Length: 245
Ligand code: FPP
Image 1 (cartoon, helix red, strand yellow):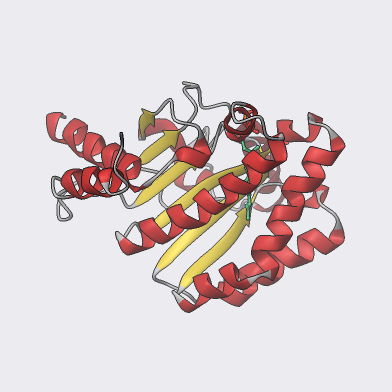
Image 2 (image 1 turned 30 degrees about the vertical axis):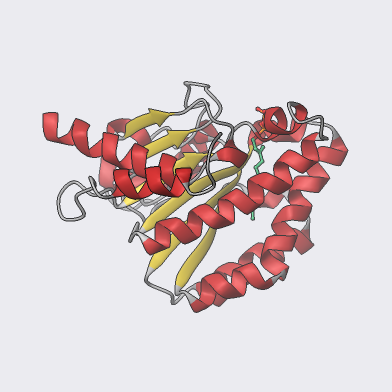
């Protein structure tokens, strides 16, 4: 039998091993994978997995804020996800609306969290684009933490649009630093640690340019089951790897 406090005990034990002063990841990026499988294994519709995934996502933002992670980038909707059944796509977009319209966004704002939506937003309806832009505008001056939601995001698409941007506006000779100014993440340093749930061990186009020196951490847990313990485990392993370098 697993006692209810078992997970929090495990979480506090591993948290105690984390060194907040050296090699602490400033920017964590997460591929929130496995919502569908989590639901199907419980005899639930895939949409129930996305709903549970959104609740886990909100909680993960809170845990990261509490633990002084400065930047969190979450892969919420890939360019490939449009190929899913229309009802599932609409449900996920509905969750984004719910997140923006309801108390969670205001809670994030009160906690001085800045929200950005990165990706090619032009494929979303005008209403959805306006909601995303308004959420970004509302939280623009918050400086305690940044949360980037990657939506209609694909790493190759990001690189192509960056090249187009440079060709259109670039005035100085192209360098790595100059190129980065045209990426969706131009205002953030690259991720230190990339986490992927669900047992898949691929980047699937996520932050292709930015992941060049990131540590990758994988867990077989499905995204809705991700928790505080797993986050600390990923950070702890990241620190162990950094110390060996
Ligand atoms: C991957 O699981 C998850 C998604 C495609 C959607 C994730 C979206 C959210 C958690 C909500 C986003 C909300 C905001 C505010 C940005 P999957 O469906 O690919 O799972 P599977 O691999 O098991 O099929």
